[in-house]
Length: 276
Length: 199
Image 1 (cartoon, rainbow over the protein chains, first blue to last red):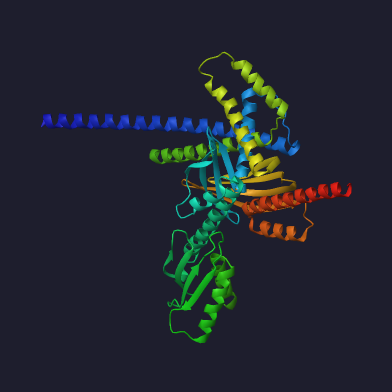
Image 2: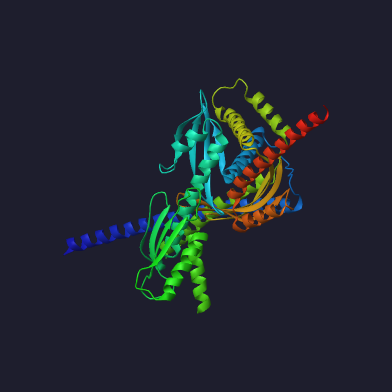
């Protein structure tokens, strides 16, 4: 009767009030978002104008920029600091870099394969009373003990150079194996097996457009730890092979001896393309 | 419809924030690269710094940090040049591309290793991928003082082809050291022979 009717009206009014509150909140949110957008647009336009002005100055006068405002001493120093950091970055690219420490020097040896930089290792040296290694990040399979016994006391430059040879060769071997796995996985059967020093690689592979058989098995040994090319390559046929395949295996053996692994596989693909 | 508008605004806010970040970095880069202060100006700035904040206590720690930072970096650079015998006489760089996580900078470096002078130009590509930063050299161009030597020019061509800057410096170091050793040995014998002749 009347009572339920009243209840219904109350509920409706309540609902209407709730909906209106929701709508108001939405409108407020929208308004604040719109304000934020306009704020950011202005900021962005200001920055764009500043950068455009810089570009105009650059194409007009090379080198020295005469600003209307005198730069603060702090700004000059900050400029110089960034400039020196830039030069220290170039040292990183040369392969040997470092920082003086309270008790000696912390050297950084960087590694690269052709133009790609592959990471660096540090060597924290103490210099008094004699030169010795405080800490380092060299992997344990690099013969650090042997190399330091031979060179550390007499010729630090030579010491670092020999370490650099070992580390760069290791990084190069690892890079080739990684590249092979990353870019030619469809030509590999199973996983590429390697030891931590990456001087022993074993894998089965096939030529690109062949069916499902992986007729070749390769074993690469790198006896020269300062070299990223193998000293011994054995490519054999996994299946009972016709003479043509045996010849191919021998040719591949030669190829792997003289060409970086991932580049060798690259030549397989391009050769196939030529045949097609 | 309102919810749709909200999303549109939120998306625009995100893209504007990214754009602002990129522009701010660009501005900083160009500011750095197009400015040059001579050693005098830098010494003056250091003096101005010291007098400005002499006797002031806390709150200006960051300022004295700047001077200390500069001295420490200069000491590091000086040490490296002496230790490696590689002296860089000039270095300029220009950011030619910066978007998202990709930065390309064009570098020009000149210097000498022992007595062998070189000039380099290359592009440095940096790609940020999560926490890893990968660095690649491209467009490498090298001019060497003894560039007419056939062996040197063959070596330089191979290096340029592969962008192999690291090998360039490592080989340059050993070659320069060898040249130096040869020169001083020759000098030594020259002195010895002159002494002998004058007897």
